Image: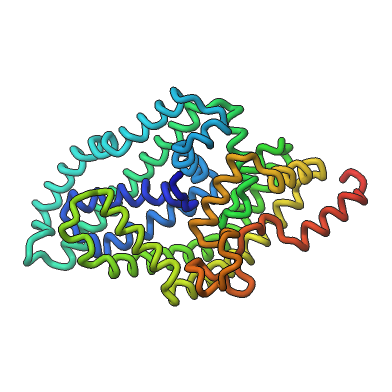
Length: 364
């Protein structure tokens, strides 16, 4: 069973398009334009989870697992249709954009010259980078929409409902909690309006948190690329390349002191933000909805338990390392007050809410 990082496939889908587009244009992968495109891709990914769309992209990855498909009741035929759509997405999107891009490129070169020439001015290269970034943003937007549609169009309403229940079960592992998952609790129109208002009011704080995560991810990528220098030379087997890259990533994630410090800082910020967001959202729920949510969190189905275990193992926070000193286990070492698995609900709020539920107030 392969390991999962919660943003794994989504990042690959969004940033893979970025890398492919720049590779086609011979633009340096480490160029400022490429770095900006990476940041934009990460930001789009974060926003997709905030808006609820990212969870559908996450489903694409999870549906690769037999246990997860069986848990949702997804047939082989449904999964194959989704896979076929995803497989064709990148190729078809590039084909759609190639003709218009070549026309734009020719017009640009007629006016500004060849941006790849040794004597090309900085202004010419910058203008061309702007065209590339706009193209990538458009391609990514269309690709994301098609992938989301692939899932929504091929899963039944009952299966999509079970997936939202799964998201609630997974809440302890999610650094970003979207209001969309609560729809499965049969919200009233008034409750939906309240959650929409909460999301709007907290968007500025989310943006700050997202920037911190993106900064950390960019630093991580930079360290991985530095550590990889020369390691892939002469390695032609794709599986071996993947293995080497994975080993480097694990080593940086688990043993680099600066990355551990940055991760702790980000997770500390995330805990404060997500606790405030969750409490605001939980207060919208009725006692009946609260109890139902607790049951999904405290008693997740087996296929959800397996995903939770995978994520904790990947992050180095699984129970298997509890007998090993934290600084020797090779896992991520949470700092004081930082986010930890199992914090789906702030403990103080859980106690207060359960007490409140035993002594309900009148209908408001």
